[in-house]
Length: 485
Image (tube, rainbow, N blue to C red; front, side, top):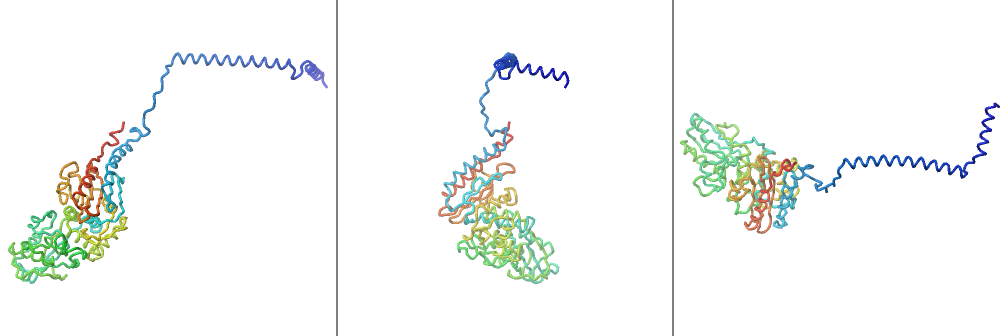
């Protein structure tokens, strides 16, 4: 063991003898030292903070924080939301007042900008009256197409300037085939008609000057059902029919106060009279028959395109046109020009289009049959597909100007802005269509009233007016840009 080790050990022993851990002297010494150190540190820290506080106080101004007054949803945050709420919310409140005026047998649906604003019994099957024509027009545009035209032709054996034997006038189902004089005597004049004189002129242009036989009316394209079987006697002949694929002037012969039972015979008589008036000699009396397929076509005329024919039907609520369009739908779909084939084709097409057919009953095309049943939601769906500016919407009557709305809404903000299809039967009053509120924007509505007394003016007029006024106040302003900061 080294001398240094012995010296260190001796020193430790000597220190332990002098100071014992935990003795009062040690404790007091440690506490005193700790107090001095901590106090010095706290004093330095206080001095530093105090100096900073004095500096900040000398350089800063204390301001009160103002109370927040901005709403959670502001124009700055959501202008589109606020614009929609302001405009559509106001319309919704206006329409809510209608609910007390509309009975439990009726329905109303209103849509604006992709939102359903009101739906009062939308899926209740109701009697549609002439609003049924909206369904017919919609399916016709789908099945026949907007380029479709009706064709009426004459067939015969031509030998120089003579027709040897009979001249066949073959109907193509054109429901608006008219003579020049007919619109002048109609309560709602035909405005998109097909001129039967134009066919006579086309025949004469081939050099024909005489017919050795007769003019034979051929209506074989469709069946010979003249009326929907369930129609009342008071409606037949006056409101609709007799129906056929060959009709001129709705079956009226100019100068004859009695409408013939067979529209093809009436057409043959009318065409004979026109030819004679134009200098063509016709030997025999008008009759009906079917042209053989091997007899040549001498001349032919076409109607206007389908949307124009449908505009005639919708604007004037033309019942004959609606029934013949229904038969053409059947003919085009299954080669059967019948009312029943057309009705079945309509239901099939609605299914393909995704239009609900629950509760739908189609007995005719005009809506005159009281057995028809349609939901407001069905008509509304078809109107929404058009949007108000397609072939359907532009074909409707214009408030205060045309057709069945010509003498309604003649004054006020809704004049010329409302386009609609009316419907009237005893105990039924309908109005469906659009009210424009911008160059390319329109609200869409379907209202069908059923029940005792609803077809009285004192009942339906206040409802129609309230609906029209509410929709007329709606506009595209304020827009989101107008209320943005």
